[in-house]
Structures are given as C-alpha cells and as structure tokens.
Image (cartoon, rainbow, N blue to C red; front, side, top):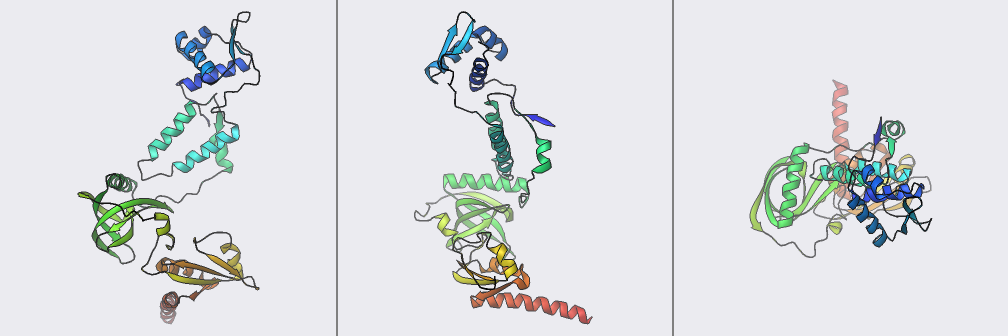
Amino acid sequence: MATNLAVATRPQLYRFYYIDGMIKNGRYPNSRGLAEALGVSRRTILRDVEFMRDSLNAPLEYCPKNRGYYYTEAEYSLGLLKFAEGELLALYLAHNLLTQCEGTPFKQPVISAFNKICCHLQENVNIDFDELSDYLSFDFEPLRGEEKAVAAYFTSIGEAIKKQRTIKLKHYSITRDTCQERLVDPYQMRYYQGAWYLVGYCHFRKAMRIFALDRIQALQITKNKFSMIAEFDPDKYFTDAFQMFKGPNIHQVKIWFSPDQARWIKEKRWHPTQEITENMDGSLVLSMSTSGLFQVKRWVLSFGAEAKVLAPEELVSAVVHELTTASSFYSDRSEQ
C-alpha cells in the first residue's frame, strides 16, 4: 500500500513550492490559475508572490507575452523544505523512532509534528511503506509497564518538576521486594531500555535516588515546594551507575571475558568509565568504576563460564554464592 505524505490542506509554504514548481516547469502561472488550483483567492496569491519577492528574494517577474510569472534568474532556488527521496525515507524512519514515546504525553504531539512537516512538502511524494517493511524492520524494546498508568505518572511528575513540588509516591523496590511510601523532590525523568525512571531527592534516605515509573503504585503532588540542589548534575550522577542501578559505594570492577566473548564485548561501550585490556590469547579484562554491583552481578552471570569476576571481592563472593546455590539445586534434583 502506497501512502501519500502530502495532505489536503494548502498552507502558505506549500503554495510557495507549488508556485516555484510551476515556474521551473515553464508553465508561467498567473494569479487566477494559481488561485483556482490552490483553492484560495487571487488576493492571497498576490500576497504570496509579494512575500516571495520581498522576503525570499525570489526574482519573480510577470511576462505579458506568456501571461504569467517567471524567474529572471534560472538558478534561483527557494531552499526551504526540499526533501530528496532518501531524506523523506530518513524522516519516515525518524517518525517510527519517535513514536516509541509510548507511555508519555509526547506520543501524539510527535505524530502531529510529523504530519505538519508533511503538510509543507513541495510536492506529493509516494513511499510504499509495505515495500519498505520487506527490507527494513524495527526491534524496539516495548515499554515496560501499563502505558496509561506510566503516562499518568509521567504527566504528574513533569508538572511537579516544573512547579518544584514534592511528590508523595508509593514505590515497589525490586531489589528489596518491598513497597514503601516516600516523599521525593523530583529532578529529572530519564528513558532507558524500554522504561522511564525518575531521579529525585528522597526525604527518607536523605539522598538522590532512582525510581522506575512502572513500579509506582500511587502518586500525589503535595503543596510543599522545594529548591533543586544547584550543583546536582544528572549526567555525573549516572556516571557510576550500571544499567540504571546504583549502590552506596563505588567499586573498581574487573571482569575477564573469554576469547569468544571478547570479540563481542569490544563492539559496545558498556560503561562510561570502562577500560579494556586485551590478552595475548584473545581474552580481555573489562575494568570500570561503578556502584551498581547488583546489576553487574546479573549481567556477568548471563555470560556463564565465558566471564569471571576478578574484583572486587564483594562481587566475587556474590557471584560464587549464586553459582553455588544453582549448582546445589541441580545436584539435589539429579539425586531424586
């Protein structure tokens, strides 16, 4: 199915391009014909022509012999929204990316903005999206949590951030498997791998904390105003985090990866502080400074015997405990 990127409305920018196209095709358009083709009055067309001359520096003149407008400079170009086919394809792909704003109030505005851009195209352009889907696909991680609930919390938190109001929330902690009520001064919301997170000052912990929006069970904006900590930098705050997880202390983590896994590990940046030391046998050691040991443990275990923790000892012990427990479980089953 071919989808037309232009729409029925004819905004001023569209009219400019229509006039420009007619002139470049040697059609010598006049105000009467343009008015009929674009569904506007002759007065409107005359204003458009005047604007093109005065504001867009178009070398427009009227030719009595051909009874229409032409350019006195053949090389003139409007230079506004002229999209090549590849650029239109990029616009379409960007639209698909931006529609991943599921669970936020931005979803519909993004789609609306895309449609408005399409209104301003200089001509009708057809792209067969079904054909595109034969060789292009998107594998986005779906939004975590129930979309309407996440969107509602997103809106409330955004309002609280703008008004600098403390919020009262009931949040489920997956690491502690508990649900607690907290007073939080909201600073920023951040999207990561299919989930939205709130960064804010927790009154109970007396420190900055991270809260997943999809794990919020209740939220209320209070009347209490707060002042943001001036020196707080969210980017610096996340420097020692690992996949949105932070702990109380920063550790120097070192992990050995087998030659088979090393090739894959080198292809991606896993942490802002990471350093890689390659060994002669093809293996490598990944070093980083992070406080998110809980998540690092889960990540390392996903590699099985292809990864070994070298430091810190706290992380080594945690991984050994997990592997010993798993080994004991399977050993008990084999004896049954």
